[in-house]
Image (cartoon, rainbow, N blue to C red; front, side):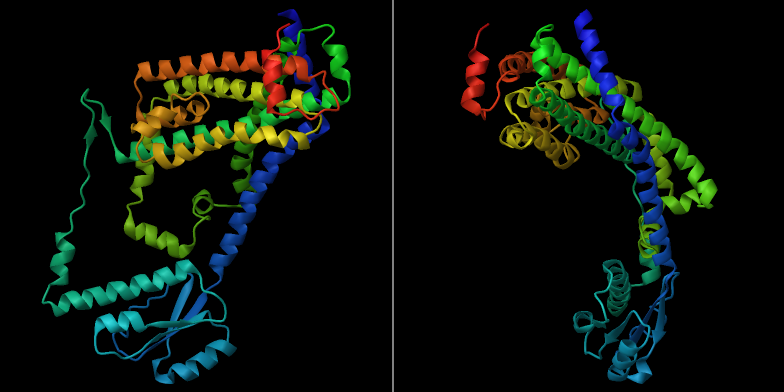
Length: 441
């Protein structure tokens, strides 16, 4: 145990004293926040530019103010000028585009005959906004032609809010489900990134020591198993410290940057979508839904999620890192490791895929349940299922399988590691790995 602590300490200090580690630890948060500020700045500048769009309405259907100006789009009626003259003027002038609505016999024909001309490819958001205005107007005219009172239709609209309960009486909601998706997705993605970054870091560390022949001196005083485990825990500790520092710096910058640059937080939150999108969102949904989602997050079993996150986080990391360490011991360079990386990365990617495309839609379906038991995918899939409510016996079974698999993986990896770290000049294959696993000391 004393030697293991020394190895962990050595790996941790060697990692945190590395110049690139120090630079990226303090530079990365500034880069992330800076990129966010740059996106906000560019989006704001883009939204400030008013797009001038002209329209020629030969049908006379849209001449009653259907095309209304917004903060970013300004419409002008060029019907009297005609489409040919309008196209020439738009092409030479500072216009975003021109809408041409020909005169047709029916509303259906009009809907399929509208044309849009522009110098460059128009924004999908702008086109969607225009199509929405056209469809809404034509639909209302169609309903009126059927003798339907539009005012009665507006008054007849009723929004339903179905309250959800389980049979034990616990209340749920759509907002809580959205919050569960966000929390579970964040936890699964964080684990995936941590394993990817620091698992490969363990592998590179083993390869570096192996190629420099330092490993021969080290294994003369400690057991290979202790060395492997010390590397895994030491790198994980350095990684967690780096994540912790990132969190603090990003939190501080997120508070100071808006005050320094005079940025409105509400503007910052809406900077990722354009003004047209925001307008559509406001029309389609009540802004109070955001508050409901926040309340849904607070209603989640946060303590339970945090504790289980730690268990699955370390279980998944230790499982994959032991395999990465075994690969590092079996090869002489990072290039040679590619043939062994694919079988390890596939279940990790599969866990992310199942989590985001299956768990979100059906968290208690057979596929979600099965993959939450498979140890190579359970750290991600089960973390994404937990916010939706999972029975304790399922969690315990999943954890037990994960622990047993981790112990088996460490035992197998240690056998490969024990032989592989002293093998030089020969490219190992799967047949060699099988021999090393069967080799008895």
